[in-house]
Image (tube, rainbow, N blue to C red; front, side, top):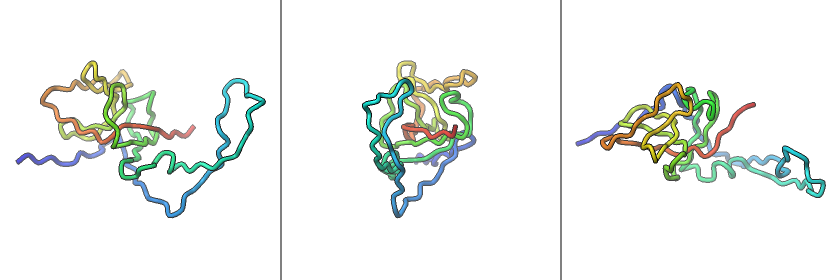
Length: 148
């Protein structure tokens, strides 16, 4: 019998529980904002936007994680909140939450061509994937929330 325990989040990631809201919260949404010159013909039509409907449309396949380490800096920074989708496939150049051979979960970029997981911070070495390795992918980072 091969018993596999569920990996922990360790020191690099912190799980944030999702609590379903009884009522939806909506914010005013006026469309896009131009970084250059705004179009005078564009109307500012107020709409309502629910962030949970936009980012957590399927709570059963969504995890919120807070970044605690700097291996993915400058892309991901300590304190960033990651919106992770477990129903997406691991594809080249995507950032994933993974456990290799039942180690703590970590966040790394997948390089399909080089068959490894890579930290965006050059101070951390890439993780080569061997044929005998067992990869557990919790999900793919789809969005991030960062305070500025």
